[in-house]
Image 1 (cartoon, rainbow, N blue to C red):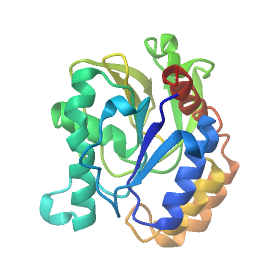
Image 2: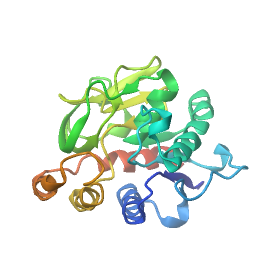
Image 3: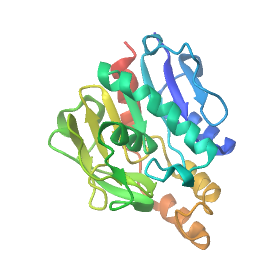
Length: 245
């Protein structure tokens, strides 16, 4: 089968490696069946062709597409430019794509400049997600319960549903938790790859990045440890199963 292209945006090696391992584990992908690119330290190949891949998976990261250019580090700006450069072809061709957390920002920004910090940011923790009526018939949400917990933590969010998108999952604090553009371009606000171990690692790595007061880190770890978060990983597995053929 063709490999999946996995684009990673985290400049912290420990967080990036843990996320990559989680994506492989939760999707049932073997390392030899993916092409991993860490955009913080390498550029997209000039000869990159989507036809060489079964699909594209984009991980999360600390950047915000809605930040002013002068507020972005050189690394954040370079990462954002690289991912956005693929979106015109991906959306035009309706090419298989799954953007996780930062990925919904990239998709929403590309389609409608509809991402900001005005509303719907979420503190680090487990969101109470609900599958919409349209979501119940989507292949990526097969075997997902109508309500499930998912790990979140983000400063910006999609403010409105762009034209051409289907609303798949919502939550009380952030309505657009999962969307689909066309038939094959997906994005989630939550982290489908994250479990309590992975989120504990991220809490400790990002506790000085403005997501929460650093002194709350231990409390947040305990809260994540107590959360029942298992369903979202099926989305990764279903994405790979749908497009690996």
